[in-house]
Image (cartoon, rainbow, N blue to C red; front, side, top):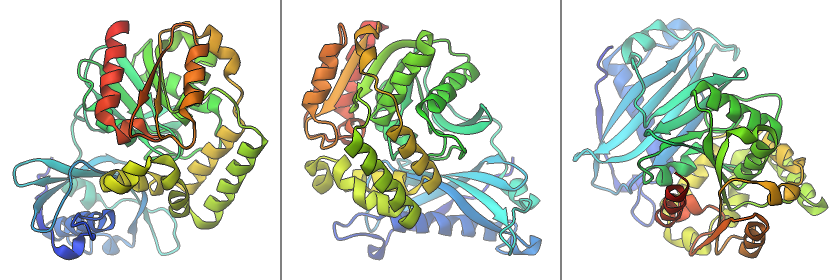
Length: 401
């Protein structure tokens, strides 16, 4: 595999916001600059134009792990993670001089000609970047299930935990928690149509649940602890409905069992119209203040940026499909009394979308369920309070190991 030179870049004041931290937009630009610098050192900046093609970003997911400030120097490395005839995927990491990982990004490119038609990836790209002979356990993989390529993070060994993200998120919402839960095999996929997973022409709770059951098959995993956040909880209920034998234990975060009422369905339709008209950035502006606790909004800019990156990194069609799936989902209340596996219910004290009292009532309806309320957290407890959330989950897991 060809060794791709890393690129060192400095952080200047114009890269930073009023608080002195690098913005998401600036980091995207820095990563792009690094890619072109690497091409300049290798096959040349005209590698695409020579072949009559151009790389268009189809999907992108960006995550900050530590703040970057003016005066920092970062080393950016780029690796080819997947390639096909007309598309390729890159993984980029940004590290400080001391080796600390401060950010990473996963990008999917499609090569198109001037008419917008898919064209072959220049062979110089795969020859220069090379392809990893294997994927480390903590890095993003892609697995084909039911005709769709799902992106997923896998870490560790042991009893498996399947983390299901919510709407309008992706698998990276679980990374802060996954990093702290050692001693378990942690699996976090992007759902169909979201994050770096493929789009589909079908979206329902049944489709999501069947995808995840097929994913467990592909990973040679018979049973797993199912941990669902928000919409991920709706899918966890569907797993119980359709694949009960795969559920070892259940963790329900910021979710509810009831189906949408008439007002809820109307709001889903309004968001679908917003997405189709103005795209994911408009959805981000609408949703971020509702998803996070007031403290998170004001005191955690990196959380806000991570959330915005997740929302804007998914295609509008996949997000709209998820909204339709949630709008049309069945009522899971009848399941509560017959779940039959160890269950943990977690709520955020400042959740604006699902009141903590509703989560507590749901827990009380599940025989033997535990209930935990996380302070200073809204609708996204694993992102807003990962330490507290990890501790609660770890204690529950030890009891069901």
